[in-house]
Image (cartoon, rainbow, N blue to C red; front, side, top):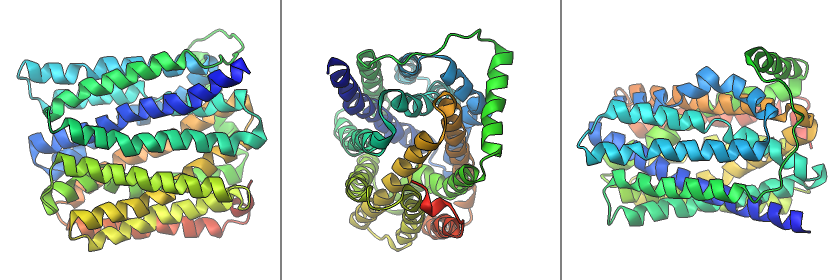
Length: 398
């Protein structure tokens, strides 16, 4: 019982606290860059380059995650992210307002964060029975989405007292608190192996070979990759451009848009929790892909902040459908010893496409109205869910 209580504390608190820090960072970083440069193109380029760690190192992170205890990986990654972010307000304290130095720090911040999601998702099956994984992932997502809701609200309130660069101090506080809370979690046991570059490469190749032999799981990852190519750029770069340069809003308005997105995600998680036992995980995944993309088409009609907030709720509803179901499918169908590597590959598909997509938005915003970009990308992303229905097996996965 004591072990279960510690696990419950971990599931409810660590995703919440860590994600509050990350939510504040997401608001502060992209707005800071847009504020300094006042350029869609440069903002898109900077956002793109901060995802390069995933493209360069992401493939090998999974092997590293599988070689070490997952809770230690989570603590280490979170502490290092906090240490990096401390440097941003210090730059401003010394009047060094360099967008390129901030970009470099964001590069390291995202790099140290790479093990987080694979380690967390690989940790759960070591502590939870397979039949309970959907509910456990729902709890994790409720914690995460609560953070996505309240993190931007906290950011909006802080912005009434502090300049945007000082918000990074609060990110650091939440990161360090998450690292401390992780020490409470029951430890997962990892067989000790000699760790060197050759071993990491070998284990990485084992993960790729596993996916090569399993076509259905491979298609799920390909659909994830394509969907994120069309969704992540509008979400990361397009929304702040829409708020600041089209609707004339400020950083607090942008933070509230992110909060309404979190509210939609909480509603979506409640729906998944309620219908998860009656609908296959595969069908939930495809439905999530469609809603996540198609809801962006509504942004074409935005004329006010109130409309944008409402559409953000609708967009947020689809995200838990695809995330919770995809994670549960992988946890149930992949051997425990390979989970870190497979989840790392999924993270690469998300993060690398986030970088490419962000760069695309920055360039396209020079030629197209931002609302038109939302419409085009929304149609393409929604089509990924429809395309997945044509696969003979995905919709039946459980």
